[in-house]
Length: 237
Image (cartoon, rainbow, N blue to C red; front, side, top):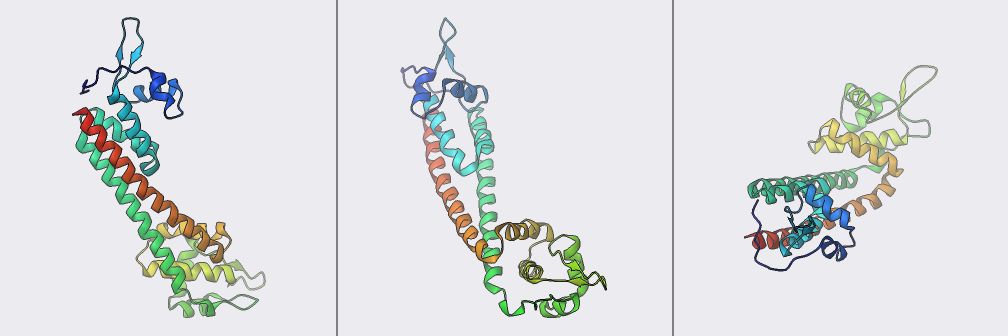
């Protein structure tokens, strides 16, 4: 592993830790994990770090908010092992995941916008045939969605027929819009679960605004992490 000894400055673990609110044990753990290059040792066995290690620590801490701890660790390990192309691949994959999350958010927002509020059932609910007709699908499709737990109709105790209440119709309409957008049932399931956890569409809209804000924050954090990583790569030489 390369380390550019361009600075004669020698830093103790506490010198690296203090500026980031870390413990000296955390610094040592980062070294052992490969996040920092290996430290030199004094004749008495004490670790000594340099500005290169300080740059590695800054890069790692800047990468974590955008890429997550595990990916940031893998990126730094790759860089410190001179596998820079592997580090770039990991960064590309992380950006691709962010793009997928943005596309999923957009699909949900589009589906919510396209929902037709006039199709709400009456007080007693609706049956599979009328609901399938409203959505322009076959009853078999609704039964398939039920097996995937995308809709959870109750059964009429007298007839055994499926009865779809307002929440079931909401979930069916949302599933229908997402299917039209090309989403698979297994991709839709966690989104429907999010609607149910939020307590409906109106609370979900606030959750979606928060989701968008968090995606934007991740994107900006990735820019900050990229700048610190580039500075570390230059320092390593």
